[in-house]
Amino acid sequence: MSGGGALWNPLWAVVQTFLPWHCVTNPMKGVVMKSFTFTLVLLVVAVVLGVNPACAATVRLFEGNLILARSGAQSTYLWDATKYVTQLVVDKDLGTQGMRDLQATAMQTLADKARNSKSESILLSVLYSKIGAISPVYGTATFAGVEKVLTLTASRIEIAKNGSRDAAMLLAGQTPPGIKVVVTGALPPIQ
Image (cartoon, rainbow, N blue to C red; front, top):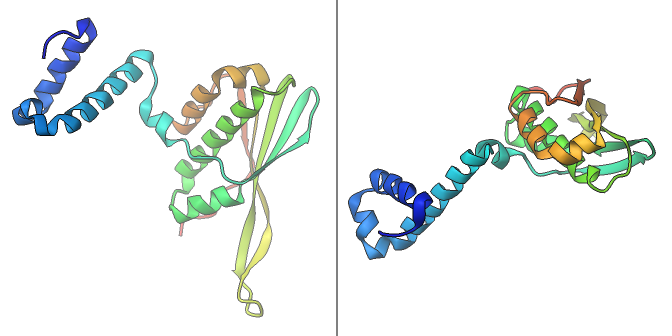
């Protein structure tokens, strides 16, 4: 393959090195080659830009209800994360990694809200409904109370500017500068 400039030639050399010879030259495998090359190019661009693609891809989607409880100098949001925590239980993603997932998703959600807020700071309280034993009378799980898991607090400007980076740091177990994380509860135990 010829042409492509200074960036493409080294990438093509890497592709030729790691793929079997028949994949590179066989026209029937062109789609696989193009897909692999595109993925490789995205990975190289992410590394050059300093983005950790593993972290960016693993922040879970927000599930549950987010309520603006108070606005003003500090906006206070409440996240009923019952659906989110239920999915963590189903995926058996509890313990330290489950808490990191919860914190990262909370940070990403705050970043989305901070972009449209006028407050100086934003606080997010994360809670979920605990499920108790199965009721012998009704045959359904009983309500066992509410668990307040954590609180995130930060400057609105910080969150709006660096929310994605901060979410990736929380996912990796690091507390970002300017972000206050107070863990006040726990996720359900691993069973």
